Image (cartoon, rainbow, N blue to C red; front, side):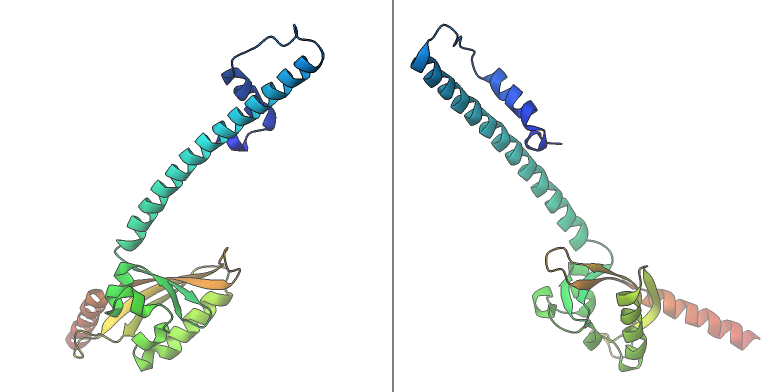
Length: 199
């Protein structure tokens, strides 16, 4: 906890300790009042300097945490999205942009459903609606997205989402995590086919 959040008396005590002591009791009348006023102004100046030091330190710590968060967010192995309640992309990490096959700045404001197979849209819409009104995380498996690289190979995503109130705008939004499970889905389908044919 930083000092600028501490009670005023602690801050004042530290400021007075930093100020060289002067004996004001030998002075009389106006001289004593002026000296006390100067002393109070000096104490107040030191209090402000202490608060400034603490604010600078806190700002440095906040910037370091922000850089760490951005690094973790952008280079996560899954796609992170923030959606509005209409399903439009508000924010996304680098992995999410790569999954959708476009630059991040071109994706903000677009509906997420643009990137999913039309046959998957009813499931995607139901999933996002459930996420919007649920108090818990919701999950969806093997949502088929449209692959930009190959029309022959579909891409499958597992999804996890939860709604929250954005503290800046006060609006409800949805945090969404997409994980590419294409290889797992294809392998599972192959195993099911083998078991079905052998039976």
